[in-house]
Amino acid sequence: MTLRGRWALALSPGPMALAVAALTFLGGSVLLAGVESLREVQATVARTEWPFGLAAFALGGAATSGLLAIGEHAWPRMLHRAYGGGLLAYVVTWAAVGGAALAGVALVAAGLFHVDMVAEGMTPAEISANLLLLHLVAWAGLALLGTALILTVFNIRLREANLRAAAQAEENRNHLVQFNVSKGVDLMNQGD
Image 1 (cartoon, one colour):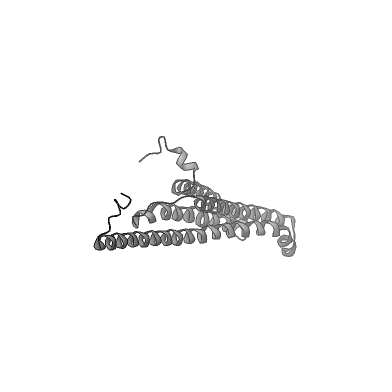
Image 2: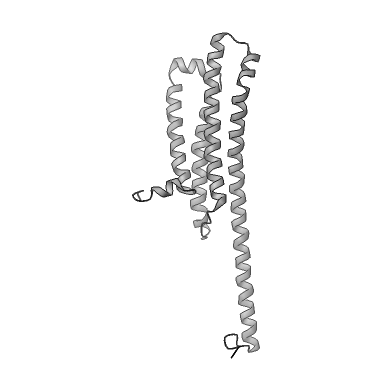
């Protein structure tokens, strides 16, 4: 399976966009982990927000986007249902990708600023006050990621409710047809 002629799928909401985002976050996580593995870098950023930014990229970005992509792709197929897509898919895709990116970038930046502030000799209270905005941005990103997960569960429940209603309507239609046949009503030639 290749993407030849299917790059539009990578830019539209749904499983393919989430899979591409997961691979991008995985690449960023590997790059950040490689930089962090350098002894000097590890010694300076070990007690800052940098490792949490790496975790936001790896867990929030790569793992969560990957799991959402698998869920969007595999869940309907496992249940033999059609994929709905729509507005909720757009919201889930952008909330997951945007939330993980926002949290990861904010925490990595906070880690770098934290190292610089420690080098300048600031007190922990001053560092916390200066990094408050970046911490709030990171929390907002994590909230977006949580919103994507909640909306995914809601989307699954909504699909199941719609499918149950459609199955019930089909069952009711079959009962009506059986009733009319047993009573001898000819619905096809009623107006003739």
